[in-house]
Image (tube, rainbow, N blue to C red):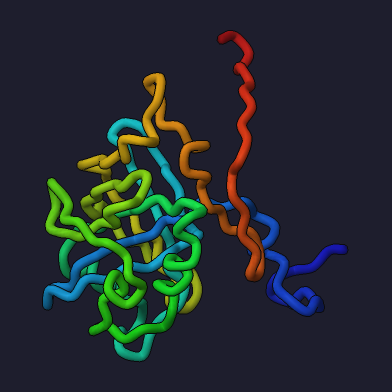
Length: 201
C-alpha cells in the first residue's frame, strides 16, 4: 500500500500515529499568568540535545477558550516556563483523565487527583510522584505548517529524580515501567531491556 497524505489513506483510521511508535509521553505542567495550574499529556515529545539538555513537544489542536492553541502552549507563551513529567505505567489512568478538553480555569492536578509539588528553579508545578520531572525554560515556539501546530522547545534547568528509580548510578526505567503511546487508543509499557554496544566502544 502507498498513499499521499494529501490524497487520504482510505483506511478506517489514520495510520500515521501508529507508524512512529512507541513514543514517550511528556506530561506537561504549566502555570497560567492568572495562577491556574495545568497538566496535559503530549505524545509528540522527546529530548533533542545533551549540552545543554533540551526537550521538545508539539501541540496540534486548539480550544475555543484559547484561540489558536491549547492551555499548555498558551501558558508557556505567557510565562516562559514549563515542566516535563515522566509518565509511569501506574499513572496511566490519572494521565488519561488529565487529557480531557477541560476549560482553561480547570486545574487538572485537582481534577485528576494528582499530587502537586512546586518546582525548584522555575515558578511552575510538577507531578510530585513522577519518576522524573524536568524543569524547563522556553527557548523557542515554532509555528509549524497546518492549523494549530506548534513546536515548543525548552532548556532543562532543573531535574527531579524519584529516589527509588536510581540504582547503581543509573536512572532505572524498569523500576517504574515507562508508559508509551502507540497508535489510535493503544499504549504500551517498557518491561525489559537489552544492551547493544556501538562499533568502536
